[in-house]
Figure 1 (cartoon, one colour):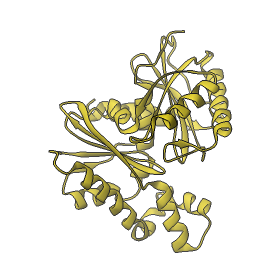
Figure 2: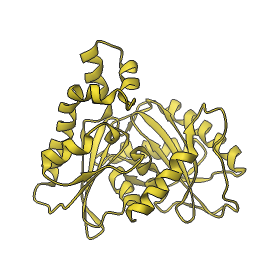
Figure 3: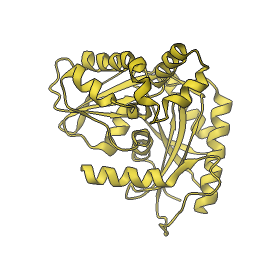
Figure 4: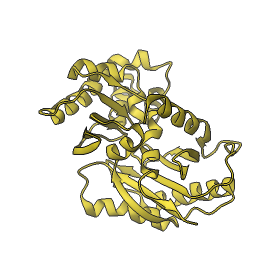
Length: 283
């Protein structure tokens, strides 16, 4: 996918996705619906449901802060199911149509038995889980790198996918993500974790927080550098909500010596990529 196409998709998604407690539903202007594709992303910090049409264009979606998973592991099964159900119901009312199928994902390296727990959440919420894909591979379904590295910096982990000739040839995942940013902010400012979370996502506060967070960004960069050693990497694309932090791409580029960029609205890339993975709703 070219850069203009990627920006267009993410801009549309940002306009259509909204918080669960948003006072008005997101606008819907694309009837007839045709086949739907749905992605459910159980992130460490946010739970996102993305709905695309059969041409992979975003129709609607929702995301909400939720701590139902940690480092790819479901830690609150009942809470996760309840939240997915509520988001599903809200989206169905907006579309005037039932959602029946969805794909989801996981950080690379998570044991298969734990990955199945994600599928169980999706199915307990009333959706047939048609596929599970590792998160950086899902992200590249949208980003479309031919040669390079996708780095998915999530709430709890940093996932890596090395892409050669359009194929993912290596994946890895290590603990370090947005939660670690919040922890160092909370410690440095002697505030609660929840307060640190709110500060972290405020663009106006990020330049002030950068010196505190920079060592964690360098840790992310060191994880990337270690896992891509021996590969020819012309570029690095950072995705995941944490990658939107001030100067994140700059730190990774300086550490690795490789050009690094972040797409607009990087938190939406992976859930949209999950929806693109072979899960057409035939209803």
